Image 1 (cartoon, rainbow, N blue to C red):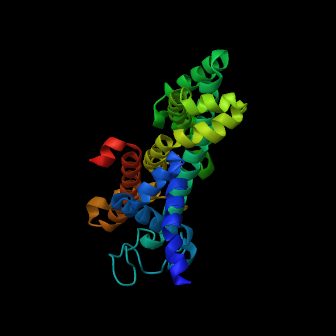
Image 2 (tube, helix red, strand yellow; image 1 turned 90 degrees about the vertical axis):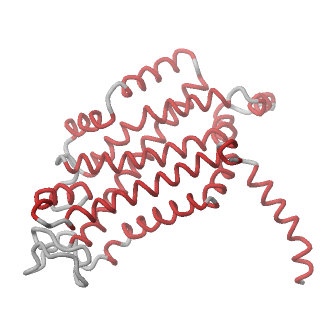
Image 3 (cartoon, rainbow, N blue to C red; image 1 turned 180 degrees about the vertical axis):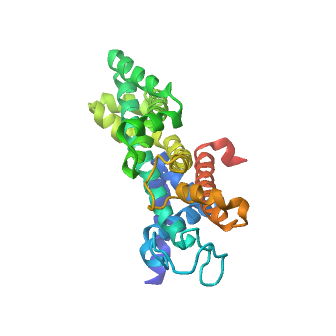
Amino acid sequence: MAQTQSQYAPLEQTWLRRKRDESLTVDALYRTVTNPQGAIGAAVFGGLVFLAVFADVLAPFGEAEQIRGARLLAPSGEYWFGTDDLSRDVFSRILFGLRISLYVSVVGVLGGGLVGTAIGFISGYAGGWLEAVLMRFVDTLLAFPFLLLGIAVLAILGTGTSQVALALGIANIPVFARLARAQLLTEKERDYVLAARCLGASPPRIVGRHIAANALPPLLVQVALAMAFAVIAEATLSFLGLGASPPTPTLGIILSDGRRWLFAGNWWFVLFPTLGLSLILLSLNFLADSVVEAIDPHRRHR
């Protein structure tokens, strides 16, 4: 039995390698997770997501729970990250803040990315007046700075977690639309697209089944970069009072509360949420660099 398995092992490995190489997207993901830098980024980001999802179980205190006699205590064995000016555990608030910050960034980037990618693919494949109308809409959104557009949306819709996610999604639409259109125009002229047309494939099938699979790797890079920018934007909007309303914690709100006590010797109030933001940004940038290296043959060979 063992001899039979060893006999077919090379064939199985060859089949897996061939199936992996059939799609540039699958191949890029495989190279990303096998890259040490990508593996570290994925592990760190996955760990942060785990902490955020299970914050209710892992946090020793509630997100707004006040502890009697524990005002502005330094980090210790009981309070790992110290306490704030309202006697709340900073470690617990950071865990719940991670959940909200990651939720807002993921929903905003994926929502804006899907809409923008659809606009880019439709306009690039259809061409003509439809392309002109869609791309002028994209150019209009692109004329506004990222953060200013988010503030304008929040001024209309009001403040809150869902509103911030919607604002980030709208701000991400033009970037993904232009990138998706550029990728589709490149792939549209390939021989495999001509072959699919000759076989009678419909435009939705050509775009969704053939072009999208090969145009996706650069979009994955943009997803990682956009999530890093979205985390910063969410923290900035919350810092300015345009995000979630207190006492709901986000990393930006915790930083906003701690800035008043920074020069009073309460360094932990600002240090630990800043480290949380830094870990998110570093892990996402590691993932983005690994995806770039996976899809760029020149960097991969170097």
